[in-house]
Length: 430
Image (tube, rainbow, N blue to C red; front, side):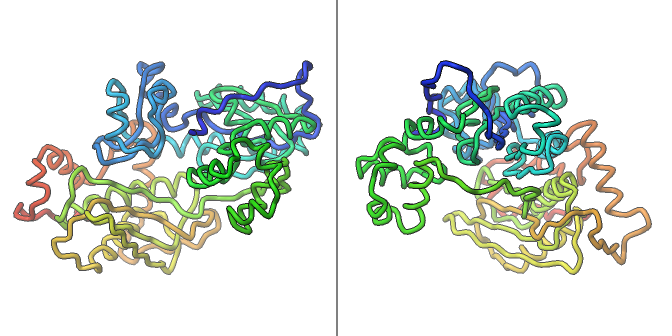
């Protein structure tokens, strides 16, 4: 059963929920990538929209709730999403926009409490225990966050208010879209135990099937199953973990300032490709995109890695650690291209390539060494000029000339794209 099908459990108490001691908030943007993209396409609000690659071999990044009503879900192949909802408008992802809005959301969180644990671009845990005297009770703070994010960023979010991280995350999911659920301390057991087993944090499809085979359909069933039985069925780690969650036990604190350890981008091709010049252009595009996201996060990285997936789905990765951390598109591309060329692939048909920056640290204070061949106003300044243009005119408004050829290639036949008899293409550094 999909977690999106869970309904909010009925409260047995008649009075409004008491949020005393419910100082952990989980704040999650609603259909974040779709909602952010619609800020630039307001005419599509209220219609089915899918965010993802334009081809059938990509995957869905996000979808509006109107598209989700047809069964479209994140990480679903685009081919299936189009079959489920053929009337949907497909929009390419705008990662620079998402990073910009995410930075604004995280800045709002920081005005509420310094104890913020980001989980991704669009969600975080907040411990507001130290903020109640200044801002009011936890539910009031949750509403303040919802109002501020909507006013400043133009998107909505859902908030779970609870005494533990696990219950707060459950509550925010059940509050969607654009809602808030408070789970009082004394109602945690009743709230958790009436849910289906698939609602538990860490229960995927395979674990859910195992639990159902044991006759365990609700969280209450897990709570009243002997711990030794759960250990035997699920293992020494997962069994006790789910048992504790079934009894509402989750002692983990909110861990502030957990930053992304890596940032990257992948590209799945419409048809398998064996043209090195074309792969080089894709690596350039992905390097530009990754570098922009690294800069938007105010970080730099030392390790560049690439991923190459072949037609038979075999995947290889290669990485190189640089002497100094960087956020410069050219440096990232030069390293990614060298890693790819070192694979010495001969007529190998490639399905996907990816570029990722790892070993990220805060840009402020990080030692950044200029390139030996870089003029006074060089690649770093050029990147920042492109960032400013993209923020004003949209992603892709400024790009390397060699990437313009991708438009022509998209119009080529699949046979043309698979072949290697085409005229040679200048190096993307041009």
